[in-house]
Length: 140
Image (cartoon, rainbow, N blue to C red):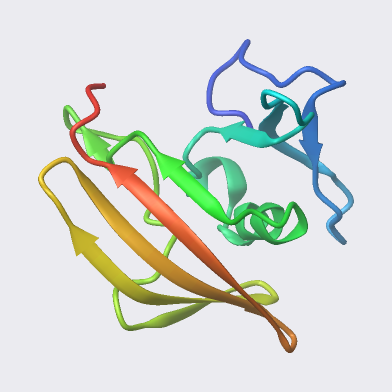
């Protein structure tokens, strides 16, 4: 329950994302969403916050384990004076370690209503590319 931001908003057991973790719990507040012809094609989750996750490595573990290639973010870090999401990615041109996962921010392109970022995500010797579309003009 400590990993939930809002009381009463929980993923259903049959559609929730389970994390393989050594911390004893497989829980993160995230749900699979079926695509047009593919089950479990998408994942919906709240923006990660330190208050619920303690650190951001659980979020990145989900990204890695589910082989996520694209993140669509529809909130800003702060909206109407309230924190909505932590900056869970490194600044442009830098690399940050999240548990066993290294994330490198290779590029960041700002446009009028969104920012596009490209990351290289590494665990051990395995590397993957991840793209993020951050919609900055999405209303609260």
